[in-house]
Image 1 (spheres, protein in one colour):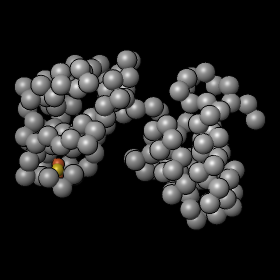
Image 2 (tube, protein in one colour):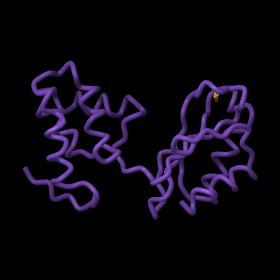
Image 3 (tube, protein in one colour):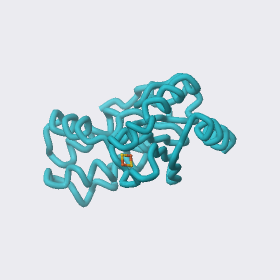
Length: 165
Ligand code: FES
């Protein structure tokens, strides 16, 4: 099998070998698909096609099933994410308090839509459903940090903080 795809420079034979090792305990066990995909995604932070093919082969699961699971669960991603991962909550409470305005601002500032990653790889933006902090809405998270009552001004501060890191 050839893995010469140059579109994912960070993903190569080394990552595939690492995934292969991590998949050993799940070999031939289709019931462990989600767990196996988690492990595989942790290696490079995303699941390019080559990684999904490997999981399908190892676990003996049809490739279409793997694709289906990866596209169904929002925690799986097939594209590399940014160094800093921004999540904007679009649950009802956050939405009525201006989450869409924040998304518009992010789109203006970073020139990406939800699901996208900036060209320099610094930021990715995704939407999430309720984070369980509705009283603090609108809520934005960056990596492990949670920000509440975010408005445009606060979003500027957040972006400049992580632009430097
Ligand atoms: S709706 Fe955003 S935290 Fe609940």
